[in-house]
Amino acid sequence: MEVRLSKNQKVIVNHSRDIYLIMRQILRRENKIGRSQEHFWMVGLNQANKILYIELVALGSSNMANIKPREAFRMAIYKLAVRAIMVHNHPSGDVTPSEEDQDLTDHFIQAGKFLKVEVVDHLIISDEDYRSLADSGLFEKLQESKRWVLPYLLEKRARKEGKEEGMQIGERRGKKIGKEEGLKEKAVEMARVMKRDERTIEEIRKYTQLSIAEIKEL
Image 1: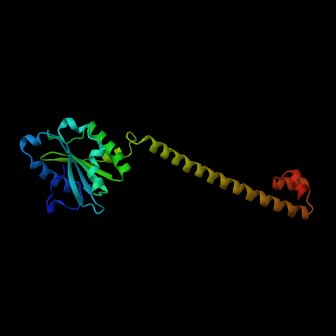
Image 2: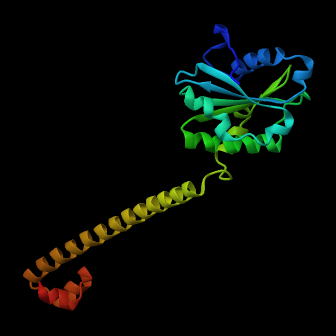
Image 3: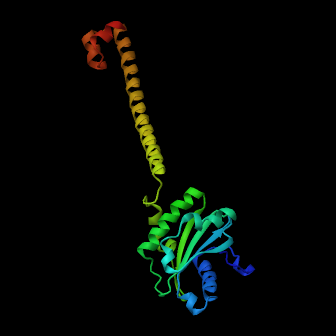
């Protein structure tokens, strides 16, 4: 369900607190019974980080673990949002992210990559406080997680890394071969000069490291 926003609430987001202040207003619209339930919202942003919409995706603690990306990102696709912020409340007032909160964030980060909607933060709020996973540094760690990465993307990433490593090895080998060829050319040129000076084959072999057969062919 899309939340009706005033003009003052369609702001450009520069900090997590900008989102918190708006979401706290929305939460406070609820009566006491409503506030005792967990709400999960998605906030969509445009390229300039201006709020395009806020959608209430799920209501009730029993629904939190069952939120599906296709439900949460539906409005983002419809509204052409390029970024999204996850927000949900903890009625207890403790805004510490749970293991389930982190896992849901991890899942949505990967879903957003697939749908081309970048998830940039997850706020856990209460009536008096909030916690931003991006500000705390936890969000960055979740971005590195591979738990929810689709298998074919993992394979693609592995192939890419393998190809890049192969190119680096090939480049190093090419440099080594080029250096060896250059030294060989110098040795051959030195051998020709020494032959013209009527140096012995043994002398030429000693100073150029060429084989006797190679020297005789010059």
